[in-house]
Length: 391
Image 1 (cartoon, rainbow, N blue to C red):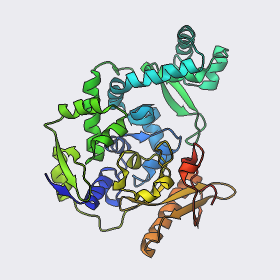
Image 2 (cartoon, rainbow, N blue to C red; image 1 turned 180 degrees about the vertical axis):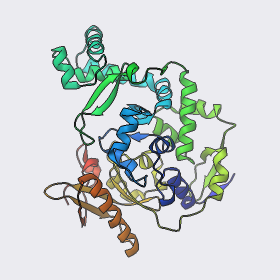
Image 3 (cartoon, rainbow, N blue to C red; image 1 turned 45 degrees about the vertical axis):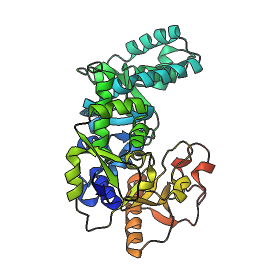
Image 4 (tube, rainbow, N blue to C red; image 1 turned 90 degrees about the vertical axis):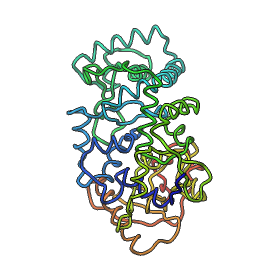
């Protein structure tokens, strides 16, 4: 069993994730395929995750692939969260995860006091109203003239492949979606073409390609699937995977056999790799075993009580701090570094902070270093969105 140095693995994954300078490309669809999808719970997340992985990203680039060319789609995916994924993976997502999604959305309907009969009645009206249109939740509610929880109904319809989330109502920072008929959006897509285990096996293979080497715990965490189902998928992939050791780690790690030689022969970039990642970025959310990139004494400053990652400063694949942006009264990027860093690294952090700050605020920004931060585990839900609010 081969033993690999963690620094080599982190660099290998940074390249796979298009986070090294020489791995950045402008093919958005290819990036989304390579990194396992874009976490889209927050409105700006997909745009920022692409901004840090491309050479010349513009907001309209993602909008075109999502809403015009429709090479990408915004659907519920792993762990029941909303992702942007390539359209060819959407049937895989539905086949692998539909059972989990529908249980959750059905329980939510019950919690919102929407009976099966009321759901069926409302969903038929919504389908009729959306023929050839895209409407927001508030627009749909006005048409239905109902006191029912329309959001819960729409949520269930999306999880059943009847509707799909389309454009944000007022641009890339807006949390509100418009909705379209799924079959009008993707008219030739068959959501029932594969079995659950066939889809799960494909899902695990894609995950290994994006994040490997990983542990079995990592796979269960990322997918949200039971270890029984993950174990069956790995058994189906036994001829395509191998186990390796990582220096200073006791567990065995799993990776694709086809990637072992690439990892062994990978070379390090001459330039030090610095990234400012958005909250819930795929790189941070891809693993359950997080000591590979984070000193656990800083865990509560990076992850909240639900395991959600905040906006982070990454150096050579490891978290060395947190960043935040305050847009009012004047745009200001705040930085909190866990320890002192070399002057050359600090200059690059400032440079990346100015770039991402200007992208978000659409104007030049100032930089401020913070001396402390309140751990996210002591903050209310949503603290990952503004980790340095009190600085």
